[in-house]
Length: 165
Image (cartoon, rainbow, N blue to C red; front, side, top):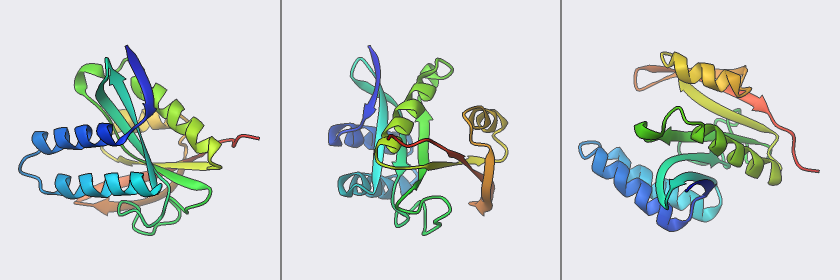
């Protein structure tokens, strides 16, 4: 059975332990695990997962506080009130192209609306034409900013969402 839901602590531990195993030569994953779990615990972030028969196969995180390390105070990406950033949106290769990430985006968007978020932002590597076209299709059609991160051009787009009444 496939489902999309807000992650619990066990999900986060499992996801990040897998990322660390898959990237043994990159010490950033250990730091990122600590940051993402801390940010979820404090409410500064909300990670959502795609599970297949109880195993996490995909994820995405709403960053809700400009103090989150990935935001680095850039309030055009996340202002702590009405603008949130979608970060670490990924799925295992075997599950790509099956609509699971779209379902995850719907779950994250619904949650964002419920907590009063009015604008979502997302970053994409300029060279990733496929991802960019997907994000444009989802309505991320307003370029907010661009910057070079680790020698890679990243484009940040925004879309307005309607909040719950």
